[in-house]
Image (cartoon, rainbow, N blue to C red; front, side, top):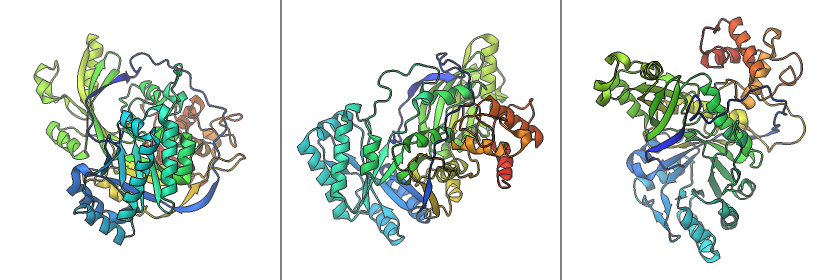
Length: 523
């Protein structure tokens, strides 16, 4: 869901056992084959930015100020009405939106506005009726032609699965009407079902989607994966984090994003795919129960300056978590007088630790607040991941002046940079490019980053994952299991990074990753 205003919603999960319904399963090195990507084409790296209508002045001024770091701007301005007509929320033909368009064109940055819709019943009524569907196709084509846009972006969310064929027909019609224009499509981030229901039966209908990826690939020239709002969709990652009793409520864990992309490229050409990158965070009301069990209740989305206010008000400092996002915890002052502990608990992560300790000692529960948000480092992770996976680029939601300012320095020089893009997975054995590690890795992690990790570990006999079989030299896998963990521990001991007394022992965090990348450079 791309709309920024989020209602207060309860999430039906907790860590470390997600409402006690997750069955912990043994995680072993997988013997499955590494997905093969034929890196065969050179392209320019795309950096696009959604510019939302609800902050017109700051959105447009922010995009204009950073136009040199973008290859495309996507004014998030056109909204579908229930009768099938299009409403201009800008309006686009007057300042500041017309100024944005003029600036982009002068800087040779593409202008591709978004047409948004999230009413499933209205979408059904219009798209299942041939007359109204064709009228909509004509209206959108006319909108592009009249304003000389470089294309259009379709963000139709909330569609029922039974609308799949009708939506594909709609895209076909648009494609025919926009032969020399870009047709960009925003699509859902699909978590592999084995990860979404790790240790649980996959319910009937879990794989029914409103978007047909094959048809999306056929008709859309650009495809943006909405890889954000992760929350509790990846049970495998939830379980892995739960086993270490850590808080885990990411906006977009790079490992999850990697898994989503690798699933998508089975049907969509990587050269069309862009990784959606969030620039906002979430605040949760968290209830701690005995033995490090947590319930998360979403309160709202926020821009990073809100986190800065909380830091100053409560004298707290954020840390970088396993998703390479920033997080902090605090106990609201309105409840301080009733807290059965001293007032100095609001330091670093003490609020979460104190609440957990209290709940465990008294076999009770206690509430605290958790903020989780991305910064420049987090966005750089996604940009590096996009290059590692050989996809088209990144699409930031949102650019409106509310994002962490460090984001722009983190991606400086990427827009338009020559990069290697992958073709669709091709049979046969092709080496995967060994690019530097960017993600935090741990038991349960999967993907190309794990493959690269195992390659690095196997470059030294003292840190080999295995001597034969899956995980051994020339037989590296994409699954981080016990053998990979043991090899990481050997690596950490060898380079004096961590010991068994360290909670990070056996996981790849910033310090371990930095040394691994140094070793990678010598391979």
